[in-house]
Image (cartoon, rainbow over all chains, first blue to last red; front, side, top):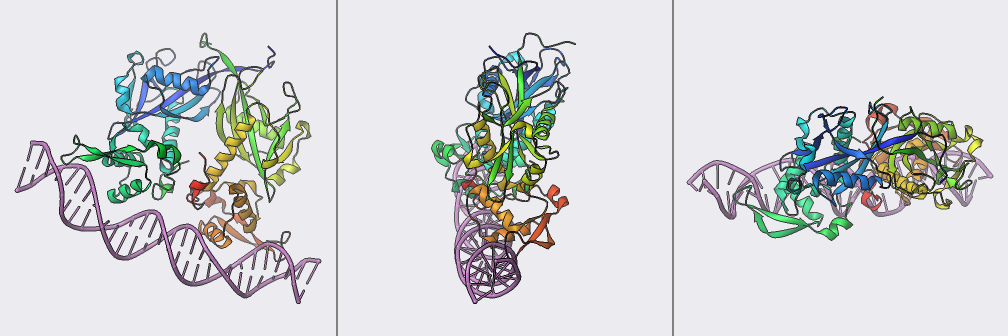
Length: 236
Length: 236
DNA sequence: CCAAAAGTGTTACCGTTACACCCATGC
DNA sequence: GCATGGGTGTAACGGTAACACTTTTGG
């Protein structure tokens, strides 16, 4: 096989920023790194890209190793390539961020990696430039969620409006008027009301809703202008 | 130096999608590839990441080689890593898109690469997955420009409102009411009216404006909700 | 004098916000 | 029966869109 002569080949890693939501707080799934350097220090889940896999495939593989989950919302975030970001050897890191239903995860836990969910405001220091990756992922999530209906990926199939509101209020660290919030959400036509109520979180109980899957796929733009005054919240 | 054992190192390239605007149409700067395979075929400008340069540095270097320009608006777009995207040898491509003032470029042309500006709708087939990269860059530009004031990077320091309007109408392939357009732009406070008029494009002449650089930097969010009904225009 | 492009105001409409009370239930 | 959280309607406001005529000047 002909090759490109005289060029330097570089290690390429994929790192995953995995978000969850426990009903009150946003969480991030971290692992204790299993090998030197920085062994035992907290880190994003990652791995090297293998010879015949695409980047997305590598990200899916890594997510599955850690959580057992497949078909999860995931998008490429950014590629980090400072020459000394990994002190051992130059490594380029392609990052993906994922949104998972934290409850599904708990059922499929792989003990192997000492994984733990951390609240975003109680996170340990991470190795290398992983803190920076997390910051970027948070910004991207706030940005994207203001314009598109993606946060549902963090909730179970059935969810209530109060849950939804907590989800959005948590992300933007603010409060919304529940009447306006419900009206706006309903006006998108993305939600199907169920008969059943969630009685765990209140005495009266709150109706469950499901996403209308067809509309959800078609109307990925449905939320543009969703957040009032988005400029207050978006960083880039 | 300790190294990561048993992992495959991969070629990493940076490719630049370089946009310009000639007053009527959006253009893309392409080169004729100088080496096999696909020699003489049209391609984005790119190059391999060198051992001690960051990705952004590589992108700046490549842009400078081709256009002579520095300090140009550029942002990382996406990283492409399908195993067979380059038939010679596996190569991961980190893409950047750039917005340049086409007039500045013309003064600093490097003949070496047989570079040419192509209108977006008259583009040749490109090598590898470069067409896909261009598509993604177009979408990103439309998305971003609907929310943030970045298109000015395509114009000279002084510009007129009719030019601005052509810039936006070209990107979204639509027409805006000029009264509403001007009012909305002026209301951002980003523009400083000059005494001088551009008499080249009309008999009456149109006043030049400049960006208020301080506000421009501060108010990168100024344009959110800028385009009416953005959901009609944004793809991702 | 006329063609071509620049510049300018007002009104109607719609979506967004602000706001407060009743309902259902478990304890 | 009372505390807790769920659910609902309306009115004022502000921003957006629709719309047409006058101005300037080069030829």
